[in-house]
Image 1: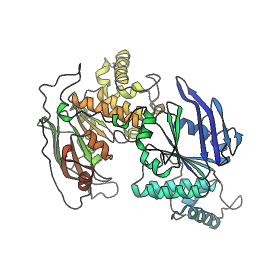
Image 2 (image 1 turned 45 degrees about the vertical axis):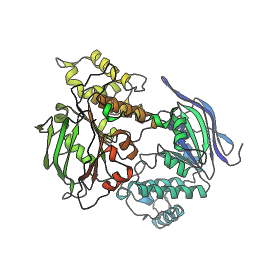
Image 3 (image 1 turned 30 degrees about the vertical axis):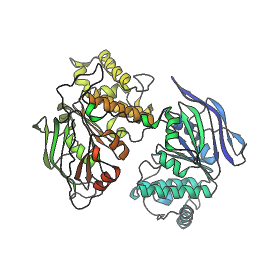
Length: 532
């Protein structure tokens, strides 16, 4: 065995009712190196790390730490062994200081009094080791997400950890914050710590990792060095097909031609306008009640079209679509559907007008996580499924099963609790509940955020199928390749305003980004779309 291997998991298997989560998976993490762990949602990454952190027992296999076999009893025992996990949801106490969070339960001093001077000094030394400038007395709730993450890393380091697992640590960070995190990870490497980095962002994995391990369907697919890995190679290993197969978008001229068996749309032309928004405006944010967060936004949506909304953080994209569906109150502006003005003051009003909304945060706004899959999907459609005050359970389950099959939602049963599904399958559940309502317009805010490449490909195919069957889609996305590949037109926004409306044939990453960074002025450019 390589003398530099700090941690080795050998032939680890784990099964849940109806699911073989892991099948004889092996992993090696070396001291002073960063190991990337990639795979689709449901590939087994989280299960493997939960076994390593003591949250799950394994069914079979063996774990070695510095060549010695170990049995991890629980998360506390894992910490005692020097294994720490930093999850996406931080384990911090928001009302305590940085230093109190880092050393909670281990404060210096006697049994009665805490030695705050020593606590302050120890925290300063620890943060200095990481190259982090944070006041030890700062209250955690006042810190940014990136700063809270640094506190989590410092807390792990204070426990003399030898292995740190980072689960999607960059998902909520800006580009500059990601670079700060990478610098900290490199410092951990220099200190001889083994870092396991889990991420769906393959470019980041290639940038920071020394080795990359790929899981698919609970099995090892292979281990690559960063030098021999490419995005295309990793994608092919993860999903068993080429990256070129991700985007299923047909040319927009053929969108009106439905697949065999789908509704025929001979009367539908792509330049038919189904939705118009004119002068949408909303004042007030949680930070500044006087600020105008959406400013005189106007655009239209055509039948069978995918309209992309592009912009940087704070551009007003999510705020705009929330005004359209009535989730927030608009201060000015009009909404027209099929040329008729409509008054949408709540999501229920939007549903009545045939608008569905897949929100950005599926866990907080799109799902009831502790309820069954069939309940989540059928919830908006209960009025149609109810007779004499009772829900027809047979009809409900039959209808839900149709969408589970159509969207290929991977679940042991319709009674599965949604919390236990992978991120990609949770996203499909959110989409399914709106499709069950048969919307004319579907608004999708970051529809592929936090899901793996395989699930992305399936959602792209679904979006294309919906558009070609006549459903009109507004897609908010922070991924330029996604917008350029899937959209017919792209609305660019900056500082709450529309700065350009581009036909995708005229759009490039550089042009879109230029309009998304316009400041203190409004440009409105609409390229002429060819309808053939």
